[in-house]
Amino acid sequence: MKQNYVVVADATRARIFVALAPHGPLQELADMVHPEGRLPARELGADSPGRTYDSKGGGRHALAEPTDPKHVEALAFARRIAETLQAMHAEEPSNGVVLVAAPQFLGLLRKQLDKGTRRVVQREVDKNFAQLDIAELGQRLGFSR
Image (tube, rainbow, N blue to C red; front, side):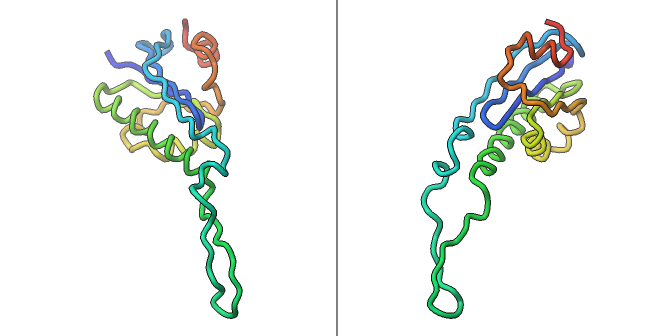
């Protein structure tokens, strides 16, 4: 029997559930944590930015970091979630996938999915429900408990 996966995530935690029927009870399969997502940006950078000389004259200035360290960490975690979901889908094809994440993280996660997994995404919910217990989560998403 094909199952439905429900992925509930934010930049620091992802939970993957399975429902054996379209609106059946949820069972938790995985709880992934990403503690680096909670660190302040200043702790994510290894050191201060490099310095360079101006092309003309004797001026010297610091180089700015090209990307926000918090964004880089969120992207890495989204990639890890997508890889896990893709492996689960390859091992046991599903009827569908429901993605639930805060709007910005949902966009990152969506971009990391391969075409085969993206094709089975039935619903996206742009809410941050990662910290909800399973009963409240099932109620808000329409899965019985």
